[in-house]
Image 1 (tube, rainbow, N blue to C red):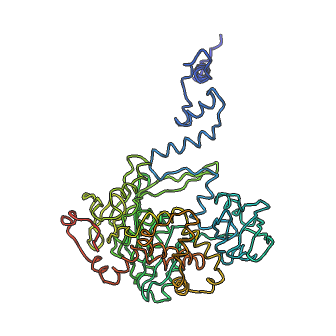
Image 2 (image 1 turned 60 degrees about the vertical axis):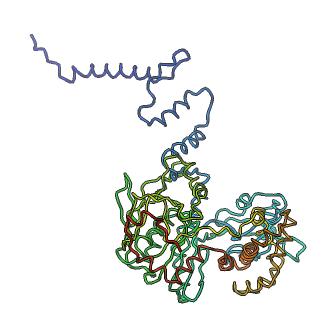
Length: 563
């Protein structure tokens, strides 16, 4: 009799495990298969391996009563999700990403002209020096009649459509038909599109023998290099005090703002720090290599100065390096990082908050929703904050101290050291009618075009302004505006005349000398810049920077000086 062999553990348990797997597989298959018409509750699981949102989209795709474009659905869902985070986390669709990046990257592919629509016709205002249009011979004053055999003159084409036809990939060609004065026939040009810079420094010039002025409109990839060039230009003219104008500057790249601040601070001075739940605190300090550490600086801000502008202004203020003049800034203290998406789009997601050196997070509240968040500027206006420093509400619990011990406040924008309200004494309905009808701008364009040969002989803004001062610009504008159906009001014109005539001259100067002509003339009606000059020349600036106040006393008054 032979001995019976014992079954191994593998032989015993393997059939049992196999049976369990088969039964489990049939059960999972049953509960995850599409439900039948009479069995609506059979589908028990919604793709447990994926997130809830993706599960719902997959379910809609497989079970919805009608066919649906899932891509379109996702395009609508993503922005709705982001709305529940903060006002600055945004989704950028693939079709919009290039345009969104171009502004901050500081260049685009185009023909290199600045144009304006005049009587439904595209008129060239200026050409980029060394750009594609200048190389082929296009001149200021030329009218663009056709683009690639399509007539664009006299057809009321939107400006964005014109831009879309003239811009394109670098190296591609576009044909334009030009109407030039004293030429009966169209002149045809084939232009090879090139890399066209988007400048962030609008202008830099000397206001007087020692004070320079720089206007910066964004913090783009090329802004730091532009600023260095502007500062070098001012230094060559013995500039000892620079006014950095950040009004209307909504921000841009954080690292560019840091590099710009570094030019003014001593080694070791903190510039900014950032921190978030998933972003550990990171401090940034000046390295001492700045080229303007011995140059006095004043910063101009307003309610539209945001983000990187507030980093710059906050660093100057908290280090007692420069005086901040104007009105309370926007209040954006959130840092976004751009993440590319597989379809070519991108997500700009808030990843951290930034803090000024004193510890202020100047982000204003957004708990009431995005719409209310952006209407905050309107609420400020209604509350009188644009006109009266006493209307500014400060949070006494958010008191901070600068490096030298001055009191500053957090909780919603950078508070200026010197508040300057808007001057409305020269505002009238007639003035607003001129502006809203576009009459001032249209007249300036028409006047510049008709007198281009005469005006182009002036090489400096002082020469051009002296000539314009000798001309009856106001009378000519009034006559032009009447043709534009703007009803004349003699009494209101007298109240607003200085404002109207000066603004018109500034726009004429821009058409001839670009921003180097516009800003020195418009300065006459710039109450913030003029206040800054007054503060600098009077010596009040230094006394404010070295004043240390007691928090208890300061809480009873506005943080902005009354000057």
